Length: 196
Image 1 (cartoon, one colour):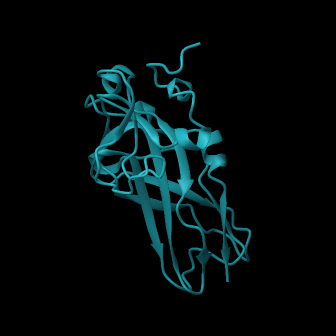
Image 2: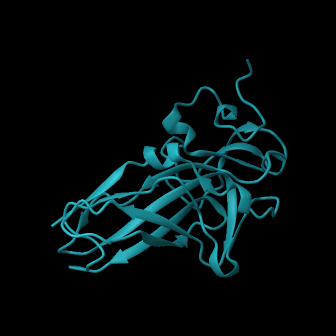
């Protein structure tokens, strides 16, 4: 069995890395690279050139359309009385370029008192040209969008691209057909519980 591969599966990433470390690895034109600013590289400069782990010329253009590899909450606390910003990171297996304002939804389970809240639409905020896109939604203090006890989840869905928004991979392929967040990825992101 080889120590790495040249496909878009997570198993193709260098085998010596843990699952957590593989989250910071993506394909570019040089091969499998480590995100700039990764603690694994010892270089906290997020503007640095990604560190090449395995040289495979043209890897990003040969693996097909960009795929979502992980989804995670950036927000760690949601306080209804103080207000908060919902923030989610979506990682891809290669760098992507964004135009317009793609969105993703966060479901509100309405476990708090009352019903009819959510889903919440998070809008693309940053990350074009990298393998990580950030989506945000600010919720003001005491806003009726959430109640204490509500449990927010990401779940399986497509990253939507309203109004002609695009997400394109290194080869310029529009990733319309491959921008799905799977049920497993959404579940792995966990939940966020709103407090009073």
